[in-house]
Length: 339
Image 1 (tube, helix red, strand yellow):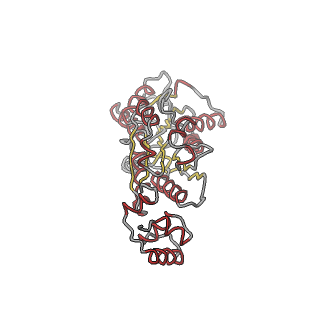
Image 2 (cartoon, one colour):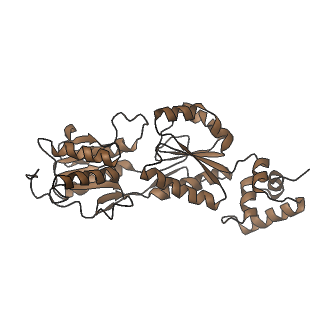
Image 3 (cartoon, rainbow, N blue to C red):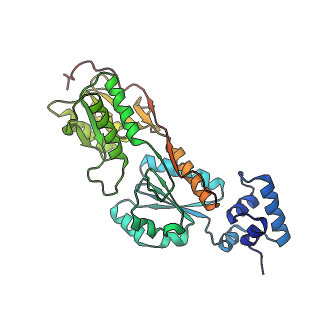
């Protein structure tokens, strides 16, 4: 009977994941542990075959990544960060793009992921108990990016603090009538970032003694087109704002396009700050709140590999955001009479 990676793992006193990493020469394995694994493999006559060793150990060598919208910049960057780490450890990535509520329901009603992957990364979806059970409950490791559930390890930023920083920057510049371009009203996917950033926006206005005007909170759907339409609505307001906080850079790009078409500019006529530090934010000279997007994916992937390797690592990680001041914000000069 052929020896398996489980046999090597038992003899060496390590996990099957450590056996795989040691035999493939992947970094992160203690030299003494690697020597012990090699000695056990030699003694048992074990020859590593990627396909055979995965099957023998009950592993697929694949990590499923569940993403709401693969075409959006944020999600593609998180996936890139995770994929780089997984590739370094010889793991494959299986992508599930939900796209809409029906896709989410269809995905979590099936059992295909349990048969095709060893663990799951879930991006920005606050999972229900039913959805967690659909992923195999405690039997399949689940790591979250951008959301927080007690039962699962997670990597995220503090969206409330990021919103506060953005609006405080505008307050410090003397702006008193500050608008918000937010996400999607009644968002069926349940993204929490839009609500947390709105909370930071409102808390900062109240702390500064400024009015929280609901008519200055307009949806932008986290898209460029949505940002365009939102800024158009704000410019047609009876009392337009002097500054705008867009909850994503992509919405801010759309807002800048609307200003340009109206013969206006930022910050001369209206100050504008975004959120993300998108790849094009520097090119657009956009003031923004930067978040480490790729690092969230990479950290989550490392977290998940630690769980598969039988090690308890960090359970909850909150990465920092920072203000990057560029050319779209400036002091309030007048009550936007040109609008």
